[in-house]
Image 1 (cartoon, rainbow, N blue to C red):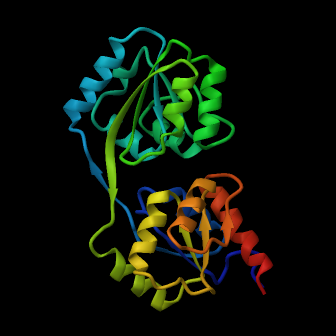
Image 2 (cartoon, one colour):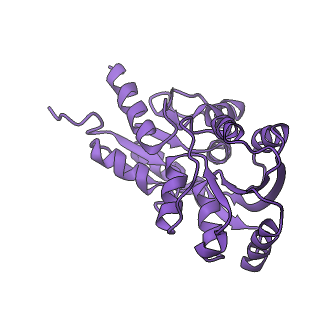
Image 3 (tube, one colour):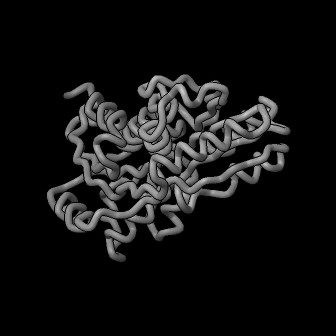
Length: 256
């Protein structure tokens, strides 16, 4: 008998290999067979020049200045448009370990990564840092939750919200998902509200087989999944790739 808790299990990951590389690696390490079926594609809403202009406006604003990243996608789009050196004089905060890893890969060290890796944890950590009177630039996805900018404004910051990208479902996603499920899967992972909504859309109203576990990265993603009519079987205690892998292992350990 294998000592690997996910040996013999097939897990569908609903983001691209580039976006979910850490999750794929964690699942492989626990013995799972991983099938990548992207339910998200990123559509930039700003040109590199517009991103650069936004950074220049931030630098022209009164200090202290913060740039706050709530996804690795936002990091890749911003640091694909400007040089890291252009962020000199700007304090960087990010929502969690995976976003911090994307910053580190681009040669940028965040000043603040909250212990609680969600919007509430980030807002609380920034408020504790002292953002009253600060200018905060928040490049994020279209349709992002208003919780973080509202909390920062309540803490006395001047918040500049900017819609950097939107998430779309690839045209072939529904067919690829159906084919993967028909071949056999034990679990599907969701890492954002967008992946949850797109999964429901791709299923076209057909319920997910009850034998297929649906595991979410955190409470917000689970809420979006339930709001889209999906059944949620497990939620990661830690909103990270490792947290999802651990939640899957715990779920299957409890399943006969």
